[in-house]
Length: 279
Image (spheres, rainbow, N blue to C red):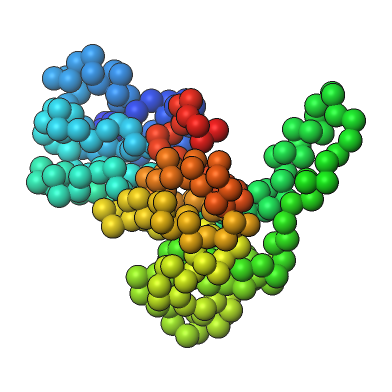
């Protein structure tokens, strides 16, 4: 029975690839070939591989690899975003692309709120001062800013954005949102959210701006010099979407000049971020 299991290609096992527990599950249903092993003998492994499991953008679905996989039927991407995949090109090989929508929605919304709270209440700065043996007093600046009763602007009120709104309701925040399509009245009333047809209005009014959009040609560089200049000088930008949605050079300038108070980032471009002024 085990010999009838299909063959799949993965990046590797370990911290840089698939966790061992996940590999144990995959092994129950598939024969696994790791990329390093595959590259040592593509002629041997290529014809039998029918699936490719992608995690953290690897193995990369490049033409040189796809051309070596004549039996490939599906590329399964671990995660929601598929902006790193040329889907039409992959489809031209007769290969389907799948993703895992919703699987990290709660976790991403949790991270958005964690970053917002950590920034507002200077959690990281406070920790560093607390563990510094040279600390003799706690500066008043560590009090941070209020979250309760503040205004939250959510850019991208999809599945994750809506979960951010649900969480922020517990802090009695005034919730604004900007989206391609307005949500239903019932959805708005459930979280007390108000629709901003113009992004500019949301940026001007929000104390915290949370970016939760998919990366597309339209959203690449969505937050740049002009958008940051519209934010309050006491405002905080939180990005849990994709690094390329925010112009990082513009963000550095805005932070250094005091155009905005702070930024809390779950994503950058590239990742991990090399030595860069944003630090």
